[in-house]
Image (tube, rainbow, N blue to C red):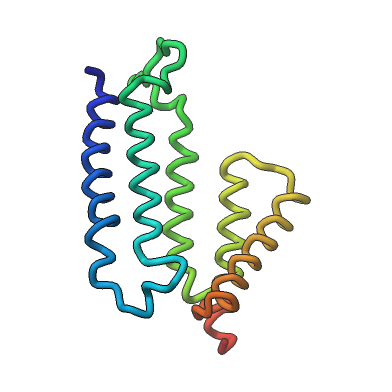
Length: 160
């Protein structure tokens, strides 16, 4: 059996155990007022277990197989695989995480999205900048105002 099918078999066992936990044991200790809610804490794990079991069966039965690929990664040609972009993107992620609290969510996330798309090769500034600002503002609004979770929007020195 191929490696992908072994991995799918292990994933299937994990998803079955996870699904059993989600379907039968998570709801046992649920408070009575929570039982009347349309969405329970076990809803997302139930969906994940069903999707994982389905994906595992698709791989095990070989439905995802396409035409045979001839080339694999040639470790002697690692310079041809854009390693620099990956390293710069990982460094940008670390810088983003370090700057998030001190510079605020709006500035840090906008800068991360703009610089990340620049590193990946996007050069349409007239699209890149507005999309980054709209996406950042939308996520901040949803987290801060809709979910009610405080997310520092501006830098610390501004006092907000």
